[in-house]
Image 1 (cartoon, rainbow, N blue to C red):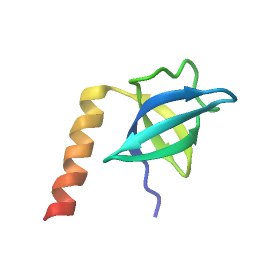
Image 2: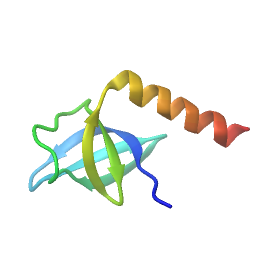
Image 3: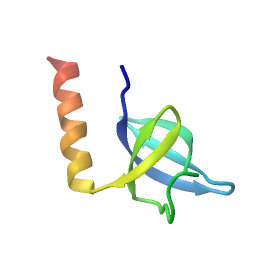
Length: 72
């Protein structure tokens, strides 16, 4: 089973990397597969790689669904 989650970019680093955050957890990720990543963007993250940008509203809905399942 594969799981890809939306994360928000909080810092862009040199060398196709960025710092992403979800639920207070920060992680260095690779942005080599997508272009023009900026602070504030939401991306789909899978095994450490940003796969694509995602609409902020869609990202928030998905994060809320994850949160509701965790607290259930």
